[in-house]
Length: 304
Image (cartoon, rainbow, N blue to C red; front, top):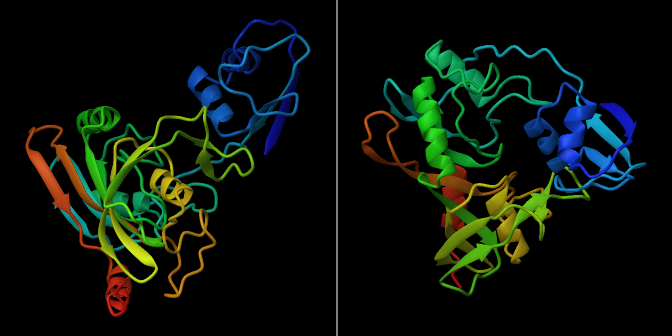
C-alpha cells in the first residue's frame, strides 16, 4: 500500500475534485471510489465525497501498488443455464470468486469463462473482467450473466442500472421471521470500522430489499428475497441488521451453525430480463445447491 500526503493550500473545493488536482493519475470517478472505500482521510477522518476542503487540511490517500495481471484461461467446470451468440448465463457454484483480485489471482469465474468462450467475450470489463456485467459474492451461489459482445454488455448494464433485471434469491436465516413479507429500506455504505465490510449508514446509498417467508423451521426461516437495488453485500447486511443473519455468513454474523456449513446459504435462484439483442423476455432459474437442499431437508424433520 502506497501512502501519499498533501496539505491543502486553497479552500472552497469538494474533496473528490481536489484529489484529481493533486494527483493527475486520478479521474473524478476514481477519486470518488477511493473516498467510498475509506482510503482517503482528511485530518485523520474519512470524509464524504461532498466535503469542502479548508486551507491547512491534511489529506492522506492510500493507493494500491499497481500489479501486472494477465488473465489466463482455466478449465474449471461450469454449469451453463443459457447460452447464445450474445450472452451466457452461469449457475455459479459456491466458493468461486467472480473475477481476480487481491488473494485470488486465478481459479475465478472469469478464468473459467475465458476458457469456455475463448475470444468471444465483451472487452468492456477490461482484461480481468471480460464480459462480466454484474457479480455475486464468493460464497453466494446462483445465476450470473456474462456478455459475449460489447453491445450486449452495454444494454444489460443499462438494464441493471435502470432496475429492469429482476433478481430473486433464496436465503436461510437464523431465527423465526414473524412477518409474512416485508421491505427493508436502509441506506448502505462502507463501514468506517472495517473497510472490507458494508454497513447501514445514514449517508449511504439507497438500498431496498423485499422478502417473503417461504418456510419456517425450529429456529430458522427460509426466505425468498428480491432486490430493488444492487448494493455490495446488500442482502447480507439488511438481513443481519433486522436480527436475522444468513446461516453460515462469516462476515455479518459469527458464522457458527449446527450444519457445519462454511459460507452463507444464499442462492441467486432466478433472473428475469429482456435479452439485450433479440428483446425476448427471459426467465431463468437455477436449483439450490445440494448442500443447501440437505440443510432444508434436515430442518423439516423438526418443524416449528
